[in-house]
Amino acid sequence: MIRALIIHRGGPNLTVQDLGRPGYLVAGVSRGGAADRLALAEGAALLGQPEGLAALEMAGMGGEFEATEDMRIALTGAPMRAQLDGVRLAWNASHLLPQGARLAIGGAERGSFGYLHLGGGIASPESLGSRSAHLAAGIFGPVHAGSELPVGPDVRSQVGYRLDPQARFEGGTVRLVPSLQTERFPEAELKRFQATEFHRDTRGNRMGVRLLSDGAGFHDETGLSVLSEVIVPGDVQITGDGTPFVLLAECQTTGGYPRIGTVLPADLPRVAQASAGTALRFVFVTRQEAMAIERAEAERRAGLRGGLSPLIRRVEDIRDLLAYQLISGVTAGDDLEREEP
Image 1 (cartoon, rainbow, N blue to C red):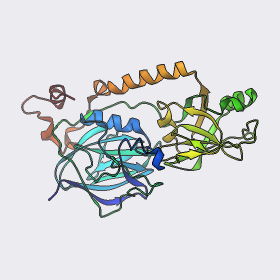
Image 2: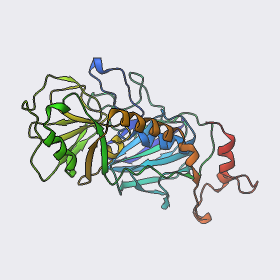
Image 3: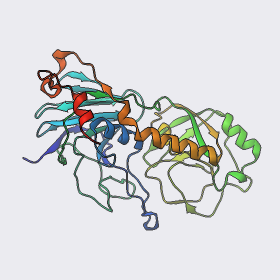
Image 4: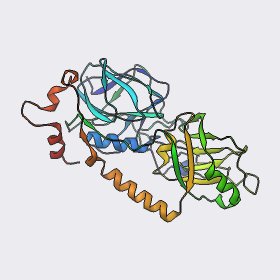
């Protein structure tokens, strides 16, 4: 039997995602990849493996899964209720999924996108250098019940670790830099934009999210019409009715709406994870400030493994007790320290 994850049940937007496929804008294919790229880094840290390995992205709700052999897993992103044969599992943590056990993951308790990571990563076929499903471009598609996803070899063994995630599931302030059309908006409109509290609309997907507010729409000085040009994830387009639309991983490659600004990559997970009704505010920063923020975020992500701590669990709930090597006196933490990233 191949090393695989069996999908017994899954939500309608269950997809395989990695870091995407940059470099194909000229062919009309945007980067794609995980809606919350930070969640991939967190899962990689928990399992001690490369960030680029593919994981299962669960939009809104999870499913029921089984492994064909013992596998290490990690759960990151939007917290969801997870149970292993009826025993609750901690989120933002790594666990052992024994062969034949049933892992049930429910709906998101906060946020929008949860992630199931596997030791060795999902080893499904690649297209244009990525395993990611790009639904808008028709590359691969959702994972359905009855599917068996091949899983790569796993050379590590540590489990039983937790990680405090970066706060991004309750909305908040999002930083952005000026875009090509920012100067076309009157100063009063830019100030009002920053003073406005927006709420994520129920309409939204991996292409982008629509934001609503109680006030009037936002308008530039030339009638909200520009020549179609290249756009990227994070761009905040102002649509014809003056409503902001923040582009996400599967955004189109070109667009003709003016962009009032562009969300910093460090803050884009906060937008992607905002569930319907979540409040968001925007504030402009200078390009120099943005570069400093991104450098600090890159350093923080590089040091995620240093923030791991042992997961405290009740002994009677630990089905994978032998993975902790308690008899020899060696803990999973010692194992993690011995193994190089």
